[in-house]
Length: 151
Image (cartoon, rainbow, N blue to C red):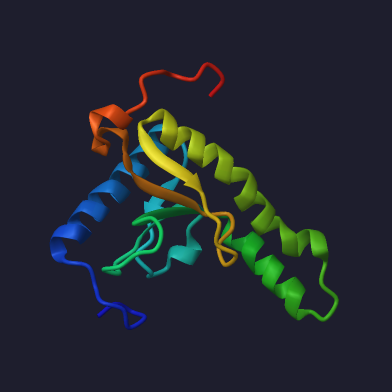
């Protein structure tokens, strides 16, 4: 069982998802971005692209997702502002706004490397990027045969 009581994916499926997550981390690092696999422990203390692997057997979305973590001091400032009783909206909004701006850049970097990525439509993590696989995973008839000019 997974953390939330759902059936856990098989070891074979998790190995494939972990391999995809490792590809995502490597691609983002090659682009010069800090990137790491979020494995729970102390990940909120790291800034950069956090790559998550879904370990549920049945997923309604993508097996891998990417979120952007601002500097931990900025997140702490936002939390402190919220708990102060008179929150500074610019400080509170900053981590989420930056995450939304980074979302487009992350998608473009991943797509340029042949990794299928798209916007997250979930209200809980609207700034996340969904990763479904690589273009080489697609049947030949569905693989892109062109390279967009303005990427």
